[in-house]
Length: 125
Image (cartoon, rainbow, N blue to C red; front, side):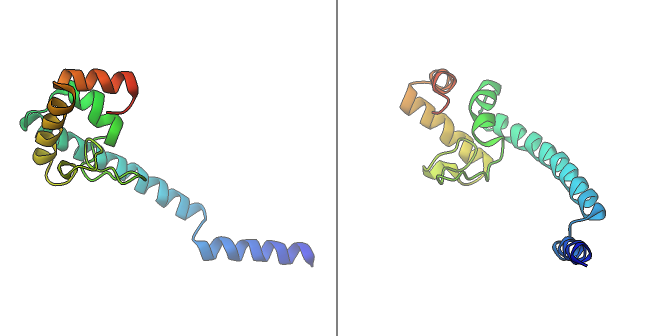
């Protein structure tokens, strides 16, 4: 009786929470679809970033490690945008964020290349 009660309780818990073979497959497929959508979206963001004056080097060395190319990214400390900042340029369009990143790099580090070198050496910028 005790084993039957435990098995029944476990089955009810699985059903109530929506876990099961069908739910797992559905969740997996949703994850695959989200990854494909994110990749397509990242490609569009990259194109807009380049059109706004960003460079492949800036994208690879700063944008991807900081936000994975997500202009709406927000971390647990409240840093946001492509370049993960608390400055106003961390919000807005990809073009606005890109121009803000470039201006920030030049003002703080003297050049975009110097900002990239700092990021590579320190793992933050």
